[in-house]
Length: 338
Image 1: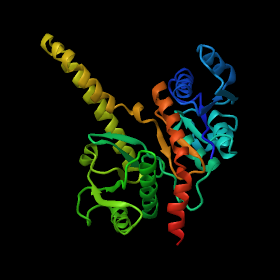
Image 2 (image 1 turned 180 degrees about the horizontal axis):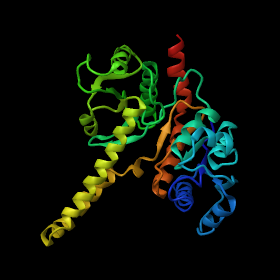
Image 3 (image 1 turned 60 degrees about the vertical axis):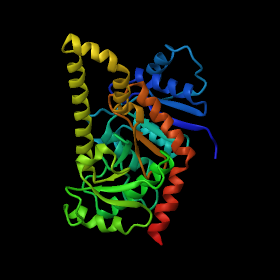
Image 4 (image 1 turned 90 degrees about the vertical axis):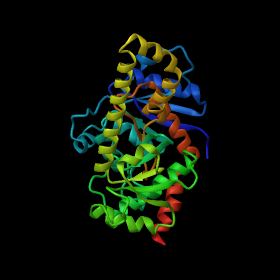
């Protein structure tokens, strides 16, 4: 397998496109010399941004795409009608094998729909989940699924658990990752119909280290490495997580600046506080991979700055190096068909 990693990057997607997207691409190629980024979007706009930087651009190329899919467009219709959009063109590069991965901060709906329609799922994978890393007091956990498959079935959640375990063990280096299902209590008999149906399947699954149920309040304390749920629950957890983190950071900053004494204390506490706040920064972890596809798709926040874009691109390099798709085929599909 070649060490070179080619990433198709949606240069027109997100609130800060194209300037932060292009900057992130440049930072990624500077940090790792095996990465080549294909910036997909309006060529003249991208070139104008690239011209602002005095650096080696030999590992950055431009693929023209004249259309843009916005957040307010119906995803299925947009994917089918806007064939020359940055999302569709980039996904076709992955489908044809011209790119190893696709990264975008654009329309979540269009990315989820387009990824499954164009790149397609690995044979045997029932659903492709979106799986972001979330910070905890112990480091981070993988939340799977958080937006791709509302109204999932028990068999879907079992596959999510397997794919999440493979990702955490091979990409993040967590040996025998602990898997838990989101529930309203620790007892096995608790939960809605989906949880009650899924629990025994996970319990009897030899390919994962299932530790039982996890309540939402336990998630920030790192009680599990892979947190399994259907997308509606996962998305609510993720959005609440981000909102509470933002509110706490705001209140801490306001409190530290409220009096002359607290300002002195803030100066003394600044190094430790900076380290703590860094651990809560989503940009440190890259984007959310969509697992189980033919190729890799990574969705970054719509508000992504260059750091998150850079880390998402580097995340793709690690994904390819660890040959995650082949491991999913071998460890999930073969086991499911035995």
